[in-house]
Length: 80
Image 1: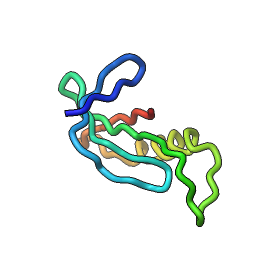
Image 2: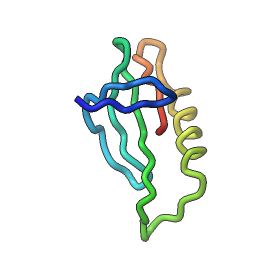
Image 3: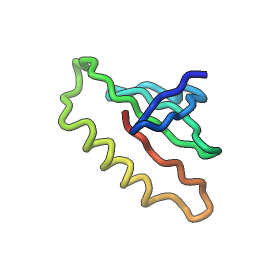
């Protein structure tokens, strides 16, 4: 299994969750916890104009986090 380092910490890649217009999302684990790691890519997209991709990801994560119910498992987002 591949390992991706973020802030000098290794995360084990379990699987690719998907690819969107802004990047790749992976399910990763570290110390028994699951995370979604988003790897931003800079591929051109003819039908979409990007602003600040990182800020957009942060804003989306905050918006989604507000809608999680108390019994759901929270998966943190890491951005490479």
